[in-house]
Every structure is written in structure tokens, then in C-alpha cells.
Length: 379
Image (cartoon, rainbow, N blue to C red):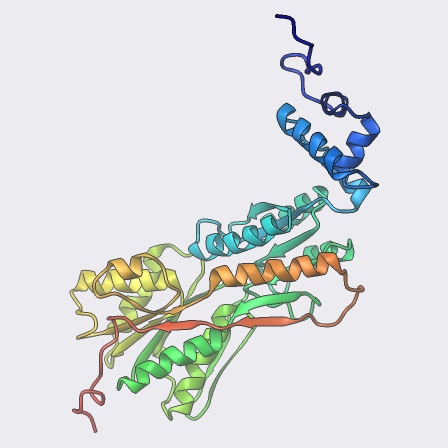
């Protein structure tokens, strides 16, 4: 039985081109270009035929040509310090979900928290003509490479850190109030000797001033700084003096042994703490590990409260009480702000940048017990 020949197909192994798509859809090459490029007029029926032909042939619209026609690449970038960290993987999910709804793709660049790698990442993303970038800056002081991105007309939103002098919008967790709530909970349970254990960026460490009456912290606007500020503020509000010996700050990226040593030093004090507040997930893991190794019972002999909720904190016993960062919501909010900027670009030099603060949550589980006052045996 004779059949009519169908539309020609590309030769085996050959990459399909626009002419092949047009022939398969039964339209002119110019009509296929309009339908795929999203410019000019094409009827719904023609657009469906052309799109179906492109899918059948495996044809991909040339990105550079599409960008030249529409002024958009439908691609955004996400530059993060460590994609294996649960914070960034969860934030990336929020960013990708928003991008998908906007019809965009996401290029993820991992920097290992190294400034040189971050600078290279922004150059690569600019070369790919991205429509915008969400970035967690390695440094909040050295950001000339980020300024170069905005100077090129590409919108940027900072995640987790605030570049106060760069005119860039940022999305951050409420690190200070989240910490204040956690320390307040420990104080309410009778704890008066509360250790603060955290990681800090070695290039931009906070500066502590611990006095008999008043204590303060200064430095670049980073999560670690805000968490220390929340700790000192809550102690002061409760009329408790800050003790420098109870504050251990370990350079970020240090070997696990450094964190274990910091926890051990606090536990070995002549007047040790009755509770540990660990200001990041790495320190929480180190503290719980060492307490278990030493046979220190939690919470009977030492209370433990951490910042960041990871899956393992509910798998161990006791389950760890934590401050929860809404990481997915932070990524989603940053992406939504970025797409708003892409749709309506702001004029250059538009002020200091808006700072969006996302609330944290406190989960009271099993790792915080009462101290002497809470148990009715104190003064």
C-alpha cells in the first residue's frame, strides 16, 4: 500500500536546524523563527505546530540569537559558597522553583567560599548573558566584581549577607532575634553560664568588646555578627554579665579538630557553662559529638541549643533543640525580588538597597534542661 512521503528529516547524526523545523511544521523559515523566538505575530495553531516540530526533531533555539531578539536569555545565576551545605541546597530549591514558574533556567556556581572563585563566577555568568544573579558574597567589603555586574545593567540580589554600601537588595534571616529568643529560652530555664560557640569569616572577623557593665560587637554585616549581637543583647537585658571565656569563635573552614578544641576548652573552664549555644550547624555537630564522646549527659548535665535545623538533629537522642532558618523561603524571596528587578530595572545609583529580614522559628525538642534556678535549688 503506497503512502505519501512525510516531511524531510535531518540526515542521521546531523543537528536539526531552523530550516528542518520549518519544513516539518509546513511553514516558512521566517514564520518558524517568529514562533520560536517569541517576536512578531504567530497564530496559536502555527505556534503549536512549530513547537511540536521542534520537540520531535530535538531542536533547541539558539540562545544568543534569542537574547538579541528579546533582550532576555531566560537564564539567571546563583553563586553560592558550598552547594553541599544544606543551607545552600535548600535555598537553591527555592530559587529554582521560582525560576521554573518564570520560564527561566538557573546556572549554579560553587565558590568554596573563595573570593577569587566568586570573581570568576560572576565573569562567567556575565559571558552567558544571564538576566540576573542571586549571590551569597564571600566578602561584604570587597565587592568590586559585584558592582561590575550591576554596572553592566544586570540585577543582583544578595542572599544571607547585606552589602550595605553597594545599593543591592538583600534577603537575610532574622539572625539577631532568632538568637535572642534561644538565649532567652535558656535563661528562662535557669541557665546563667551560657557559652556561645560559632564560626566566623577569618578575613572579616567581628570585634568583641566585653566589659563589666556593657559589652558589644562590631564588624561587617554577617550572620555571625548578628548572632553574637543577639547573644550579648539578651544577656544584658537579663542583667547577666558577658564572659569572654564563654565565647569561642573559630575561623570558618577550619578543620573539625579546631571546633572540637574550642568546645573542649569551654567545658574545661574552672567555672564551666551549664548550656551551650552553637551558632551554626558545624559547631552543633562538633559539640554534640564531643559531649557524647566524653559521656556528658544531655540535657541532664549540659544543655545544648543550636542554630540551623538539619535532618540528623532529629535522628539522635536527645533530639536537638534548634533555631530554624527558613532557607527555602529565603531562596524563594531572593528569586522573586530578582525577577521583579528583571521585569522593571531600577535606575543606576538607586540608594543603599532594601534589606528583607525573614523570621526564624524556634523548635524546643529534648536537648535543653533546667539549671539550678529552674529546678528550685538556686538562690
